[in-house]
Length: 342
View 1: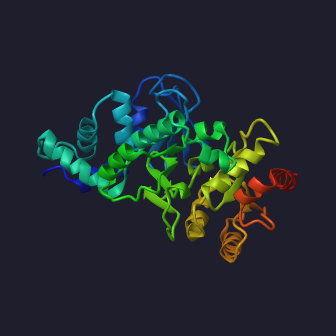
View 2: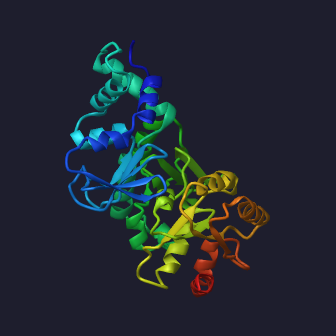
View 3: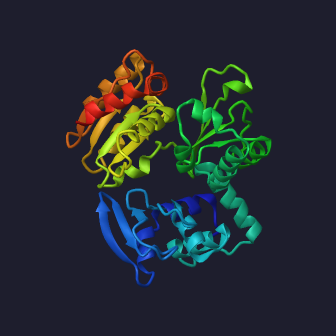
């Protein structure tokens, strides 16, 4: 049989990445939480304490600041581990999963099936994120983020970006979507998920301020499985989460225990409640918007949340959301965070 997009998706979903990594000489494994395994040394760079495999999603992630940073499926791992093109990694995964039951097809045919599978299931936005962040830094577009209270350190940490025409063209070719040029602010969620935000300076009026591309993930979702991080601030929007992190930096210079999560919309409350059933016990501080939808979402989370977690509430008072409070009264947000953490 020929290799198809369905076969590629099935193979990468069910061929165990942890079993594959176990065959690499000299690596050791240590449970690092629910469904999370620490691998040392890193099979990609040889350094320690940053390479994790996630058993629930059959994926990996490297938290290194070196070239091996990032993660993905078993196909992505083989590409990075063996330094081979995607087509070669796909061939290996197919062979390991199905055996020698398929007909070898040409590289061009295989690439077409790979493109179908990627377009149907997920994108890899790493090239877009790098280009957009570089463009923002080199062309002074960080002013927008600074006006929202987001400092240079978080712009760099999360690789926030700005799209020019060239990057828009690459993104449209990748996703086969026509994108309005006013949505030029790039908020990376992961290399598989990005959000484009409307830049008011570019004009236009839009009912929705965001365009979500790729997988539906939460900002900083990957950190939830880290047992060492036992405090989670949960906000609606990414700018609210970034404001919370900015304010927290005024309380302490380190945030090794704290996660700043954004669910992007109250429509994702159900998915958030389902996700946190799977994670280790946390102290979860809900910081949703100060409106009826935010209030309803807060009550829904409290009702649905697993009893192993401790719940606290952080409200924005007279302000519509956390970001607005941080811009108007940063000291007030810091004080509220200190109080809820005591």
